[in-house]
Image 1 (spheres, helix red, strand yellow):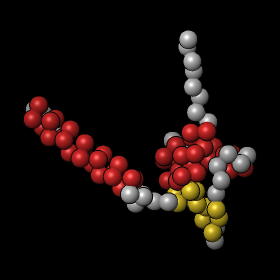
Image 2 (tube, rainbow, N blue to C red; image 1 turned 180 degrees about the vertical axis):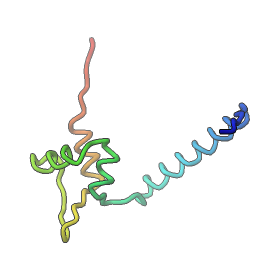
Image 3 (tube, rainbow, N blue to C red; image 1 turned 90 degrees about the vertical axis):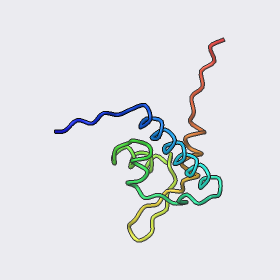
Length: 93
């Protein structure tokens, strides 16, 4: 396997490209262009959870969903709301 040498210029260019991509994503989110509904696989990837955990979140009512013709959809805003509502904050005063 051939080796490649990465220079500081390469890293700087990568950083700028990455920042540009992040800015584009944030811009799309601000404009409401991100997907409104997510499929189960997308939710599992987003939350880094297993199919069983996702099913438990549905069954116990934690994550609201819509089922259309056998496909389960989740509202992206609802997922964000659940994450915000379940946020644990420690006060170390």
